[in-house]
Image (tube, rainbow, N blue to C red; front, side):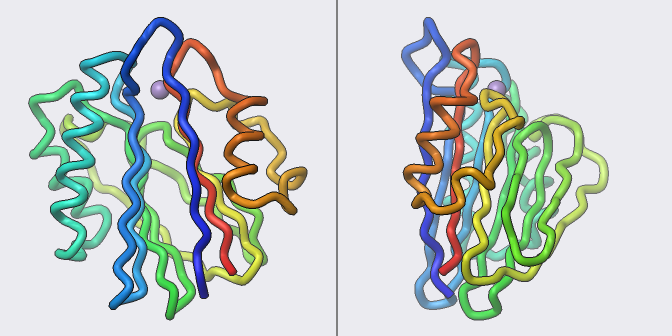
Length: 193
Ligand SMILES: [Mn+2]
């Protein structure tokens, strides 16, 4: 299985730096693609500092392959001096054809898939004390489309209407139709092929 991945972002009106961030790291040897979608609390420079701290941590931890809940718990310690983030972390397994997901705060996933994919993020903030985090695992099928988005995007879009578009186009349609201009907005789309 191959994963076609794209994302798009807009910056909150009045700001010059984005407080949302995305990290995508494909490990060809293992067939695992590591993804994080991050929303630094609020917007502006301090949100950007928090989001970038998470990205740096995430990129450093990729090779360790910690279970995703443990990864988020560890991040909470590492970025505790920042204002914190909402974050969803995922691993896509090309050989096993599965996705693993864990999230904290309001970064959401919406999927069009042969079997239901409906993970739920834990309320809270990465960077503040967290209780137990649940990991989700789902099979993937060719043709599945998954989107992950920050709360700068209204969740009321109908992914079904974008089914035939490529991931870049899907991101652009969602951002232009459902993005809010009073917050940073990020949407990432994955098509399984
Ligand atoms: Mn936000």
